[in-house]
Image 1 (cartoon, rainbow, N blue to C red):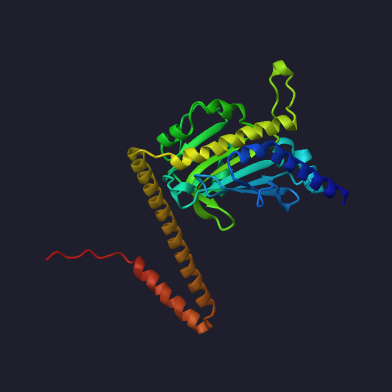
Image 2 (cartoon, rainbow, N blue to C red):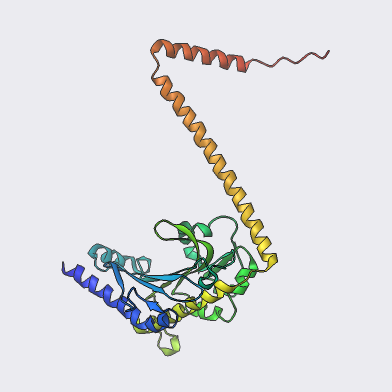
Length: 321
């Protein structure tokens, strides 16, 4: 009813305000912003909006998804009100795909790196296959204690997380959800593996001014300006990631850790398959036993009892000639 219409219109207004704040940054990077270059959002639902961008060197395309709070849903709105900071949040996800040619980022080296809040680690790994496993390690950086950086090799973390950028990420850590580069990122509904970049940030977190300036929470307009800064940082990374060349030493170390991870995963899956096969054999025998006639079942049980008695007999020592 009225609440649905109010929530839907509120989300549309917030999404359009994001476009107004970030359109210049997008047009600075892409020749085409929106399907018809009108920067018009596609409405997937009352709280999800999409914007497709293309026409940029070092990438094939970018898909921006605005996942806003389900303000159109009265029960969800009441839950968010009671949950406070633990409720749903408004996020922007920028997913950049590399192409197959050098001009579209097809020369990206093989590596994976991510910066994320520590409390989001489990949730993010559960949805990103390339962030799972033993190959990725946490590296010491000057990021805030609430943030972490992972990659297969320290060189990748050092080169793609320059010290000049760290203070900005620290200052806006309440917005940051994920910075992710990978040659095997899962994309789309089919979860195909593609080389690409992914940036996720929160739109309107609690972000207070310094105490000397009153300590008040920033306005939505101020938070949108922060969002534009983070968007520009993410888009600048496209060229860096597409052209960054991993050293031969780091490539060899990455190859080794990925090989070790593959071997570990193979052993794990083999053990699981063997356990499943044993369970299947037990179930098959159980089903066959249930289908036997009483006489056949008694004969089978007698046979198994004799076998068990025979196995329980002590083994005679062999005589030496």
